Length: 147
Picture 1 (spheres, one colour):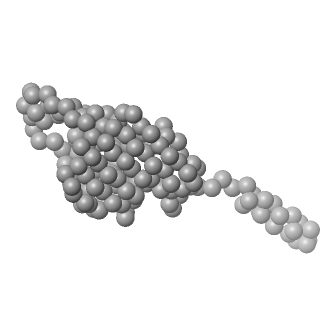
Picture 2 (cartoon, one colour):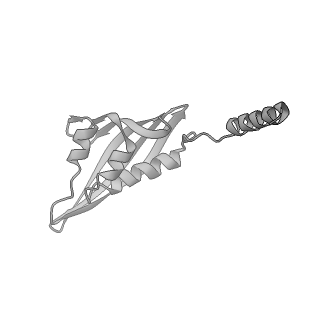
Picture 3 (cartoon, helix red, strand yellow):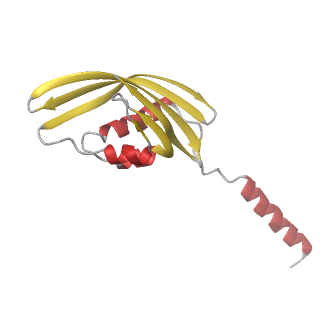
C-alpha cells in the first residue's frame, strides 16, 4: 500500500469519526418532559415500576406529600397496584418549565380522580421535578410533591 492511499484512508476515517452523530439526547422540550412525566403518572394506578426505573436517576431524591423522603430504590418499591375496589387517574395540567443546558425543571399541577368502592374522590397536587442530562439521557434527579 502506498503512503498516499494510507494517508487518504486515515483522513477518510477521521472525517467519518468527526461527522458521527452523538448518541446522547439533545436538549429536551417541555412537551417531551410532559410526555415522559405523564407516562410515569399513568403507571401509578396499575403499579408499573418500569417508568420509575427508566426516568429516575439512581441517585434521585424524592419527597412526597406525606413528608416521606425516599431514594430511587424505596420509591420503586413503593409503586404497587391499587387494591381491589380502587381505581383512578392522574392528569398533569398547567406545566411550566425552565430548560438550560443539561438541566430542566418542570413544575405542574396534578388533577387526581380516585374511585374507592364506587365513591368518587378528587385531589390536587403540585409537583416540581428537576431533570438532568447525564450519561447521554435525561432523568429525574429530584422531585417534590405538595398537596
